[in-house]
Image (tube, rainbow, N blue to C red; front, side):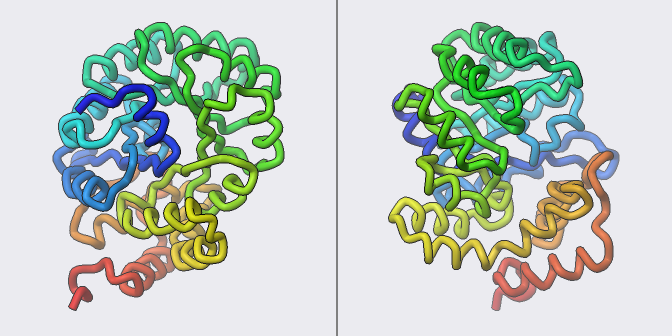
Length: 307
């Protein structure tokens, strides 16, 4: 199925599920292991799926692996929902990955904010402009993790014709509100800090949110989204409180267990997607693993407790 720009924009206001990247026991890409994760997310109604996001260990992959990952994700998704392809690293790698993502049939590009220590605000704008040009008309979503580039640079990014949305991943809702005021009202601003920050971002006008939880429990993410869309903040907060221990575990060790908790949960559920590559934390500490197991049992996600 092909998603036109308006349809994609509407979907972007939903949940952007960030897919894990599976490895085998020899630390090689093993994309077939992702099938049950994709099937569960699509069946639950997740609006968009993303390959090569941070939950997908983007910076732990080689560029060749990232290209293979987006092709594999496209095959598994099979056009049932839009697929966003994460783009980043050096400009040469970013352009190569853009071409590969377009060839794979990705619906849009999500441009990671360059982590280079010598990033100039206008350099970020040029970086995104060149990726957008290589995308040959594909919609572009900005992934903003550091708003210190300033509101002027953010406005310039939003003015790039291919840009249709911004994933705001900095814990500054008032800064988000200021950036939104300066942009085209048609632009979609997505909460980029997952479920826990979604109510604060919704309160200033953002819509939708990113989610790593969808790898494990997409139905709960959908329930949170539905509550927020209904304006029922009390229900949304109650639902977030249920899953907050999962996110708290992911935030440990300087956020180094972020992907580790997702992959450990999948392994407990019988859907092993392999280890997390350094510098991520792996395996979980005994206490972390025990807490995760208790949570999954409480939520009814472990097969041995399903009865």
